[in-house]
Image (tube, rainbow, N blue to C red):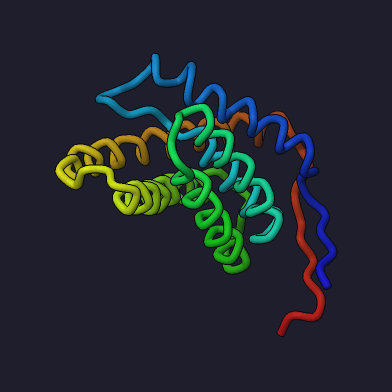
Length: 173
């Protein structure tokens, strides 16, 4: 049994939906070295780190699906985002989710994992393997940009918002 006190699901889903739209329509106009920060990853990682793996996956599934719809991809973002939410939610049991630096670095690493999963799914779907080096280079830049944006967001949010998330788990040994 799990008693959760943390971010509400529906507002998080609404904001994440807007971020998925911005991620695929607006943010690419601001590309740096061919990469853009992954706003969806930031939202999912920060939610999953505070709410747990199950609730994180419940947010990641529609967020990834929306990103697939907006980007016109065949399910790679849905799978990748959900797996990352499950990993982060499980990992967050062992880390302190408050603060700015550690969650921001976690967002950067999550982008790398998410991109590896996404391109693996795309490769299975028949995407040419010859672009692997270009995508790896872009993923590194995307991870750095995502970590920077997450860090800035967390610092600003930490100064403006005082509510903290706590998760109390019962029955786990």
